[in-house]
Amino acid sequence: MGGQITEAQPLLRIKELTLSFITRAGKIQAINDVSLEVNAGETFGLVGETGCGKSQTALAVMRLTPEAGVIEHGDILFAGTNLTQNISQEFKLTMKKNGRWKMRRNKQMLKQLTTEMNEIRGKSISMIFQEPMTSLNPVYTIGRQVSETLLTHSVGALIDRILSRNALTQERLTEIMSTIAHRDLSRTELRNLLERSGMTGLADQIWFILSRNDIGMTQRVRTISDLNKHKQKRITVRFLIDLKKTNGKVPIKYLVLDRIPIVRRWFTGVLEKEAIDASYELLSLVNMPNAESVLRQYPHELSGGMRQRVMIAMAIATKPSLVIADEPTSALDVTVQAQILELLRGLKKTFNTAILFISHDLGVISEVCDKVGVMYAGNLVEVARIDKLFSDPKHPYTQGLLASIPRYGEKGELLKTIEGTVPNLINPPTGCRFRTRCPRVFEKCTQGPPWLKEGEHGVLCWLYGDSEKHVNQ
Image (cartoon, rainbow, N blue to C red):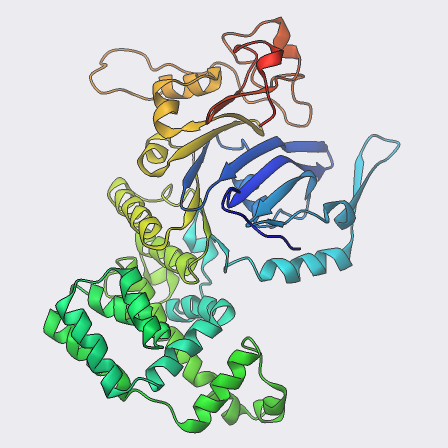
């Protein structure tokens, strides 16, 4: 895997993605030629009925497609890196004489894929799953699970925190405190100030202290002033410097000592404590009540909203470029749902993180998204800016979804519905997959509709213009 992104390129680009599931009943075409783009710092929403392919699109980006699933063709480009460049070597599909499909996977290629994707999953791309209770490990404390993310992907940042604190002299600290006391610094300005002092590793910790609402300014200043009192022994510092050079892997000269349990605990103890401290800051950042005690609790001891906050804290722990949120509010009540949405908006603003937000709820989508894509039966049928989609929907399916939303003040009227059912994806209809339910169907719909795009508004439908006006997405 390799590549380089330019400013003109989107952060994530999915091009003509087709994903199928090989079952005894036949090949299920779960995603059919889906193309979309997500820019840096943008929130892109995917909306549609259950089973339309939203979550499978997200799992394909993470390369976590279930065992029966296979990406038949298409490109997934993330930050200039093609995540699907070797798909032709990862599997082989053949059809038997009885008409059934047989799939053979290349174990060596899949092992290589896992190694490569482990450098991206949880670090550059993270995911907030739909049901946190099934995503969190029930036998580990919250503190251990959040800190594990940091110890896996952010060892360098943890070491920088420790080394920067160790190198912090009273003179440097006085200079930093003097600037903070006389100016209301932004996060970027604080980082630049610390960078000039060689203390970049403390940026997140000092920002967290300054952002605390449970203590006054005097206590914040005192807490920052005490940072240089927490210093490590010289031998520990030497080990951490060597560990940073090897990207978190135990250096060769320490391997023999690493086999001695008491020494190994000394090796890992400093980083584990730092990871717990950073985990407390993350939980506080997502407005977790009693964050310090939550670190010692287990998932079953938390409410649904608190578990979802834990998942969000884990997702942003490494400051990823892209967060995939798969129905993060579907299992929550309306009040907690609003809090989670507000939290996601705030975190996006703080870290300039792009979000791929998946939901079946158009109301939720309208609250958080800049742009939205509508999916139906594995097809992306419409993409538009959020205001344009609600004011001028093009595709009959999108129009049907919006018309079925209850409206305030309309009493005594029957809710509008979309007639029919979602087609069988083993043998989907020829041409437009929505034509069996579409109120505006006509003869040409039996042919595969091309993608018509005007500006940022795209639609997969024969109703708009002739074929010469249709362009590829």
